[in-house]
Each structure stands twice: as C-alpha cells, then as structure tokens.
Length: 481
Image 1 (cartoon, rainbow, N blue to C red):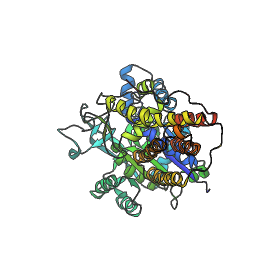
Image 2: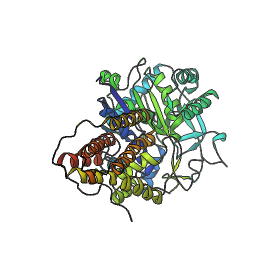
Image 3: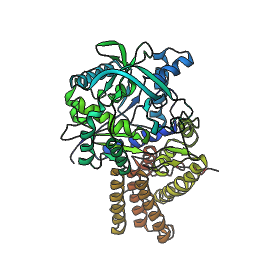
Image 4: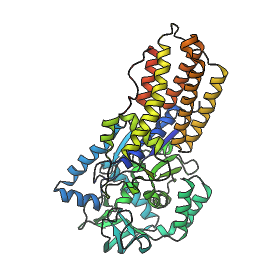
C-alpha cells in the first residue's frame, strides 16, 4: 500500500475561557480523520493548540488580576486535557507563546513586507473584540455583531500596519475556480467567493504596544505587536518547523503543485481561513492548504452554544457522566457535519439508549454470548452473503469519511449491525447449534470493531479483546434509566 503524508490542523482556540462542546466537536472530527488516515497506512501529522495573544485575552487576564503568561498557561492546560477526556491522538499541541512560533511569525511578516504587502497607515474601524475582527456596517445588526451581541462595538483609531488584502482578489478567485473542493461544503465555497467578488479591503495586522502589549513584536518596530490573527494563523506552519525545516514543511504542508494540508474550522472562521490566510500564504510565497472543511455550530434551542452567549456545555462533564466513546459517537453521528445542529442532554440520552445500548451493545452481547460457548477458536471466511454485505458497507464507509460525512459513515456501520441482528434472529443458532452462523457473526463483529477504531477507539479495542479472549465482559453501553 502506498504510504502518503497527511497533515491536518484544527483552528487554535482562544484561551480566554475553558473548552466548550463546540471546540470538542471540531477536534473530535479532526481526530476521526487522523485515525482514519492512520488506518489507511498514511504518515499522519495532526496539530491542534491554543491562540494566546490578542486584546480579548489581555483584557481577560487583567480582569482576573493575573500575570498574562500565567493566565494563558492555566487555560492552555485546560485545552490540553481534552486529549485524555476525548481520547485524542494529536501529534502536536502548539501554543502561540512558544518562542519558535514567535520567530516563525516574524519571518513570515518579513516575507510579506519584502513582497510589498505591508504598509503603515491610520486605522479607524468598528471592531468586535469577541471576534477580534473589524466589522462593516452591513455585518452589524442593530449596531452590534450578530455573533457577539452582548459586546459593544468599539471604535478604534490609531496608526497600524496593514496587509494588502485588496491585492489578492484575483488570485483567491482563481484558487476557488481551479479547486472546486477547496472549501467544503460547496455552500461555504460559494459564500467566500461572493465575499471576495464584492472586493477586498486591506486589514490591520498590528496594534500599538503602548495600548495592547500582549503579542509578538513586529520586526523592526518596537512600538507595535502583531495583530492576533496574523500571528495565530502562522501557527499552522510553524508547527512543522517552518521556516528552518523545509523538508518537513514540504512533506506535510505540501508544495504549490501538490498541496497537502487540511484545515478544520467552524463557519465563523470562513473568512479568516479561506481568504485572509490564503492571501497571506500567497504573499509569503508559500502554497495554499489543500482543503478547508467548514462545519456548522452546535446550538441549544436555536441559539449558538458559545463562551460569549453563556450557554456553554462542558465536554468534561459529559464525558464524566456518559463516557468518552458515547460523547465521540454523538458528536460524529448526531451533529450534522455541515449545518447547525441542536444539542440537548435529552437527545443525547435517547441516542445513547437507542444506538449504543440497544444497537451496538446488544448486538455485541448476543454474538459474544454465542461465541464463548464454541469450542473452536478459528473464524473462517464468511458465507458470500455476509462478505458481500460487508464489502458494500465498507465502500460506503470509506466514501462518506472522505466526504467528511461522518454521520453517514456511522449510519453505514449501524446498517450492518441491523443486518447482523436480523441474520441471527432468522437463523436462530441457539436452537440448531449452527456454528457457521455464529462464526459468520463473529467475523462481522470484527469488521464492525475495525471500522469503529476511528470513531470509538476504546469500544473497538474492548470488542476485539472479547473476541480474541472469548469473554463476554461487561455490557459495552449499559442502558440509561
């Protein structure tokens, strides 16, 4: 099998509050992709981390009366705890306060400057601190940012450095035209195309140090620090050792002729990831990423779940209550991969009982109960009817994961579980002692556990151990009352 390099990164969340379910969704989906490509035999580099500069964090630390570095250290550790809670397999956790990252961001700045894309001018704009983005009047609703309506729009007027975003309208439109799957789903590609077609305005990439000292110093100008977005986006490549480790960078990020990196982001990051960052890469003479997967929000009763809205769902509490794989399952199966989806604990519990306890759990228990009574330990090739069904499911499974349709990939697995349940009920091996039916179902359960490795790794391991050691074990997902 050909071994390919595969790089993917989540966004780098701000450390001004603990992790919530929205970022847990993003990083779990990234983990599914990473595990899937490892299953294919690819060499995977999976990156996540934290964005630790900017006005939002500066003010949050001041409000709590904490030293800035100590403040971001505490919150970065909370995000890194997701690795254990959600059983994540990321290879690197970058922090934008890392010394190497700061030097990489400064080198990136210099390259954009050498290309004539950075200039200093007066900056006067309406600004949302929650987004860390400037806003036009057309983006505001009743004078407020629709994403952070609880925050007042601030008017900022000062001398800043600007990036010549307006210069890159044509290259960006060419990128979208030539690579129709650059932004997934297609609706988000159309959205960013329309944004770029309307014309681009240069954006500020620095702040006066005397007003906001928390950031990477601008090279050659001690009076300014880099704007948080400029600094943080460079984290996607500084993690690969750029600019010093050219070999690793090209192997995983890719080249202009062979882009390789996949980025995962929420829909409120569309502009930054698929337009601003790509223009910055053009300016620095670097290849664009291969693909950007944009997902919807998790909502609660129609309102976006977020730190700013105050309706946060704590992923650590969910895991403690229901288990890691149950949370991973729900996020992958019942939160739509592209559209907003409503979350309630009642819906979670219903899915748990129906899909995990009654579905997978009961099927595994039925098969294992029959298997442990068999004297033979060998599992022969199944009958053609079984192998054909498994092949159809496997084809659908691979196709849907490649399309980022994780819910449909899991649906394919659960279709096979339903097929297996019917097969057992129709053939009644407990009555006629048909060992062939039993070994066919054990073989099927092994196929299911193999497919579940990317979604529910702990559960897959428990199933394989039970088959190999011929034990029934505890119920995989005890029913919730």
